[in-house]
Structure formats: C-alpha cells, structure tokens
Amino acid sequence: MCPICKNNLNVIKRGFYRRPSDNKKIQRFLCKHCKKGFSQQTFAIDYRQQKRWFNQSCFLTLCSGVSQRRASYIFNVVPRTIARRVRKFGEICEKNLCKYRETRNKANDVEFDEMESFIHTKLKPVTIPIAVEKKTRKVLALSIGNIGAKGLLKQLSIQKYGKRPSERLSSLKNMTQSLKTCVSPTARFSSDKCPLYPKLIRDNFPQASHTTCKGARGAIVGLGELKKTVFDPIFTLNHTYAMFRDNLKTLSRRTWATAKRKDRLLLLLYIYAWFHNLWLDRKQQKPKLEIFVT
Ligand SMILES: [Zn+2]
Image (cartoon, rainbow, N blue to C red; front, side, top):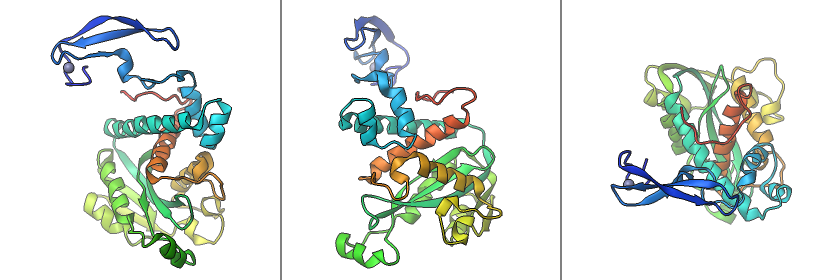
C-alpha cells in the first residue's frame, strides 16, 4: 500500500537497494498514482535506524525494570538513542493496543481504577487510569492526566508550580471512550468506591452493570498494591498495577528514575501495556515488538 496516497492499486516494484548498515537487500516500490517511491523498509519498525540489532532486547529491557540510562549503558549506545526508541516503540505500541481493541472479541468482565505517580517531583502528581479484563488480566485501555497534590504537599506545590488544573475526569473519560470498541455494552464493571465512577459508566455504557467495592488497596494503610488482605475484589487490577510498578522503572516507589515528561511517561505505559499483553501469551511466543496485524 502506498504510504502517501494510501492507494493499494498501481503500486509496482522498482528495483532494490543495499542497506549500508547490514548489507541487506531492500525492495523498492513506486506508486504510479502519485509518482512517489517507497520501500519495504518504510513500514518496518527499524525504518531509518542505524542500530537495529538491539531493538528487541531494548524492548524487553525497558519492560524489565531497567532505567533508560542503564539501558544505554548495557547496550553501549548514547542515552539519546534509547530516548528515541522509547518514542518509536511507544507510538507502535499505542497503535497496536488500539488495533488489538478493535479486533479482539468483546470483554465481559472489566476492572478499572487509577494509579498515582508523579512527573519529576511528588509536587506534580499524575493519575493513571487503567482498565483490565478480569479473566485474562490483559490491559484494555489506559490514560494519564495531571492532578493536584494532596495533603501536606498541596501548599508547597501551589507555591512552587502554581495551581495544577486537574485532568482526572478527562483522562478517565479518555479511557472509557477507548473501551467502547472492545467491551460489550452489557459488560460487568468493577471498581473501588470513587464517586466519579458510576456516572462515567452510566454515560458510556448505559446497559452495563457496575459493582463498587472497598478496594483492598485503600482498606489499610500500608504498601499500596502489595498489601496482603483476606480477599481483594479487584485483585486482577491491583496485580496488574503491581506489575506496572515493578517493571517500569519510572513507576517504582522510591526511585531515582523519575519521569520527566507526561507524554513520554504515557509512551512508556503503552510499551509496558503491550509487553504485558504479549507476556501473558508467552507460551505461544516470547514477547516480540512487531506491528500488530491479525
Ligand atoms: Zn501513492
């Protein structure tokens, strides 16, 4: 398919070129419709990359609790290279997740909640709503939004960075919007007892049922997702959150490796979410970053 005019017909082969970095033969094409040329590389994940040999291991490393700086040390590349890969991988994983939602069968049991993290300092917290399918633990949708600091940090945060408009509702709406393609209209939702949630579900899934429970995470003061309680009604979700925290360095608690930009953190979240979904299918294949097709 022509990447410029999206035309499927009138595309002909037009010779080869040898890629200098690894001497591989690449097929060139010509679109007779718009007279533009492209090659099989145009669609590849390593398009315009020099160091294509470490793409897969970089993907696995970034999803295994390694910071970007340490990844650049492991692979002997400059940090900028890793940062570029994060951007590239993030965009691919975002599209993959979107396509996955459109092509999978409809989910009937969905758990959702918000996780809190921060950008650069605890004075700039963000909320990360995530929805997972109960049975398979697969991540269906996620989003991110700024929120105001709470408690003792509130005053200091306003003093230092001004008032932060809360994007909590809009990020939650974002997440539920994207759920529409992959969740059946009569699905069962479960979440904790946040007053924002019932209206959100009613507006987007009027026929769905929604059960709220006092989440184990909020039940006792302690270790967040990893607390031990007798029975956790939204276990799948908290388990997934714990995995996000464990495997994404920027989300770990008490870490030096803080996220510096909200949009980049979102990309990392997409990368991990896609890795997580592949990892759950690991019996079929080890997680491998590819452009998702069904
Ligand atoms: Zn064309």
